[in-house]
Structure formats: structure tokens, C-alpha cells
Amino acid sequence: MAPPSQLVLAASSTDAGVAAWDLRTGAEAIRHRPCASRPRAIAAVAGRFLAAAQVAAGNSAPIHYYHWDKPQVAVKSFPAEPIRALIADPEGNYLIGGGVSGDIFFWEVASGELLVRWHAHYRDVRCLALYDMLLVSASEDGSIKVWDLLTMLDEQSRFEAKTPYLYNFNQHTLPVTDIACFHGAIAVSSSEDRTCKIWSLSEGRMLRSISFPAIIDSVEIDPRSHIFYAGGRDGKIYVTAMGVDVSSQGRDDTSILGILDDHSKAVTSLTSSTDGLLLVSGSEDGNVRVWDTRSQQVTRKFKHSQVTNVLIVTPKRLNLPPLQPLRKVCAASGEVVPRAVILPNPDNDVHIAGNLSSNLLEQLLDAQQVS
Image (tube, rainbow, N blue to C red; front, side, top):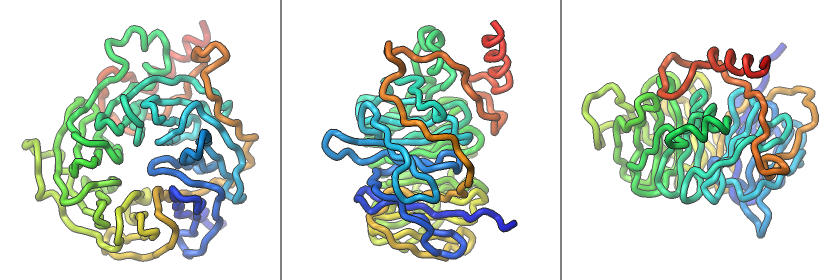
């Protein structure tokens, strides 16, 4: 049996739809319409289907679901406010959205239930990232916060916590544009202040701040090594060393190792293959590029319209139960509906302050269900 095809997806803030190309052949596989999404607002839900938060049009800003084999919208949901950032957990059990009010929404995919909603930032939530049971959110207000999801999903734990978040980072001076997490509990953020900052999620502190000659709109971490790619508003992709093992802190402009240069406008989105051998970039110039990271050469070129998001996806052709629309509120009473939480397997052995291991959490949940 032939291996499943990998697709390169590209979305735009204009109503150009989500284009999908076969990564191996370069042929366009499908184009999902209608779709107009802002950066960081589409998510492949464990490869089963695509979710995309739409740009607000009048009073409407729905979230669309698409099946891989059908171009039209499969399910349309209407959250309580426009969703600026959208991610799914690796197992596809949950969708997490960041709203324009600064609120975060946590939905269960199977039921569509809104399990919890909380106020996270003073302005728009621009981007979200997961590291095991930690959620990292970043905002138009320049702040980055780290949340323990097990605390946020339990009303009693939220009440007992001194602060709802684990950490609050305020070192960026302008809006945060992107954030990505790396093994070892490391996160990299980019900002309109022309810096990328590297954070320890286990220690709750900034490790480094790297300055760039342009505003950085997107970041992607190479899974093979301690380098990351920074997509500039000048159309360049900066190959950058993390250098998280150095003792010096603060600015380090010498960390830029090289430049990938084939876009004429801002590089708005970056994504890499799981082995790190391919990097895909999308730009406001309407072009999508596939790069060989070893030779740093472009291997494929695709044309779209003012790209805001790119993804590499291996679609799972499954007979899914009917997809459920997402609820606007937690329940009729407005309270969180109690239910067990399916936990991810830990990807690391780094201790996170305030975070229990997944095995222990599973035991606690089992005990609660028995009682």
C-alpha cells in the first residue's frame, strides 16, 4: 500500500479559499471555499479534518470545518466573538481559540461543548501553542502567558491558585506575532519590536533576546537541532541559532546563521516537516515555497493569494462520526460542564512547576470517576 500523501495547505485573509497541493507531485488536490483566515487561525485536527476561524464580516465570524475530500464547508460554528488564533491538541480531542477580547475558549471536539472560557489578555489573543499540558498564549498587548490546563479545566483548582497563570512574560514591547514550542520546555516568540525571545517554560524566565533587521511575523523551530527560522516582514527568512546553552543573556545579533531569500513581501507563516528536512513558507506576495533545509534551496513553488497560514498535513481518511458545531457558552447556566479530560502522553521528562505527570493525573481522574 502506498504511503498516505502529504499535503501543503495555504490559506489567505482574502476569500481565496484554502488550497491544498500534493507535496510529492506538486498537483493541486483540492481548494476549500469559502475561507478567509487571519494568521494562526487554522488547525488540522489530528489529520482528521481542517478547522479555520474566519475573518469577521459584519457581525459574523464563524469557524468552518472542512473534510479533506470535499471543497465546501462541512460544519459552521458561531462562537461568542471572532476567534483570532486557533489550535488543536495533537490527539484532536480539543480545539483552543483565542478571541479578540483577550479571552481563551476551550472546546471538546466530539461534543462541541465549550468546557471553559477565561480572560487571558487585555487585547486580542494573536497566537497559541501547546507543550504537553501547558498552553502558551500571546497577545496584541505584548504579553505572553503560560497556563496549566489541568488547573484551568478544574474550577476548584482555579479558585485555589494564587494566579490563574503559571508565568506572565512582559519583555516584548510591541504586539507578539507568533510563538512556537520546542522539546526541553523551550518556547520562541516573535514580535513587532524586531526581536525573537527564547523562554524556559520549566523555569519561567527569558533565556535570550535576539534582534533582527526587520519585524518578524512568523517563527518555526527545526525539530532536529537548536535553530529556528524567523520570517521577516522584509521577505527574508532568517536561519537563527537558539543558543539556549550560553550563559550570557540579552541581545545577540550574531545568532543569525543565514538567510533564505525568495519572497518579495512579508513572510507570514512557516511550517516544517516532522523530520525537519523541509520548510514551507507563505508570504503576502501570494507565493508558497518549499525549501530543502539541507541545501537551503527551493524545491517547489505554489501560487496563492496573500498567504496568512501554511501547514503540512497527512490527511487521515476516516469514517468520522458527524462533526458537531462548537457551542457559544459553557452550558445553559454558563458554568463549566464537569467531565474527565483525556490527557496527552508526556513528550519529555522536563519538570514543569505546578504540573503533575500525565500518569499521576490519569490516576487522579480514575479515582474521581470511581468515587
